[in-house]
Length: 344
Image (cartoon, rainbow, N blue to C red; front, side, top):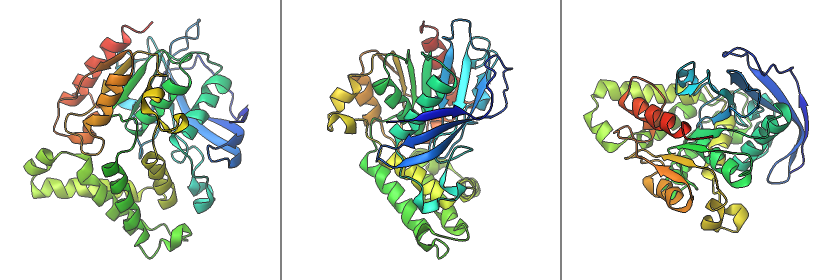
């Protein structure tokens, strides 16, 4: 992949823990499908101070519908990602947040990017923008764990550890079908116009959020919900989806739908996962219906230095939400602290 790079805003690596958002431009960025974007914008923030040895950086990547603020609650002095010790980088993946996305004007003409394209853009940011040669850890949740896996596979010389929340090495059929249904629901909105709309198809997006919601929690969680709480949860999911530009949301989920780390290895999953040499923390949710345990266990069994623990919860996929003060959040916090304590 050929890239030419530039920094749009001067970076201060010793900035305070709550740095302002920065923009890094990658020029002539070549996507996996061969298409080229003359200028790809990557938005990110840094928290904490880079050490004299430039070896305490941690890169965190959000889930499919998230952005660089997904980890805010657990970044800071004394928190899970302790900024007294670490230089923490949070980034908006291609296609959303303040990074380049279809809503900038390309709409349906925006390149059909992949998880590996996200990783490549972040690699450009880290190596050329921040001029780092090593990362103490790359961590991510859901889609972010897909990206982290690609980092571990394609840049094992650079990544010293991986933290994978609700991960899978590929999108399984149930996940793909869920995304297909969401996409169909949006397409049924008369405003959609084949993706070349003049008005965002908000009603289709709201209904897609409702279709998606039941897959993000467990059956036992739904069973104990009151009708009032279920209505609130459904509305929350509907509103979250409706806040997106439709093309941006659907292309982002399409990238997750196509996720398969084995593609560059001719479909050989064992060969792909065997590239990972870094210690790897695998934290699936015990009753995840969106990304089940099979994928996480495949990572556990094929990565040489894998540590594995199932998040005890009935929240399903949502168990990976990083919120201290919850059973799930406290469990994840303990696991990550113990794991990072062993990373040189």
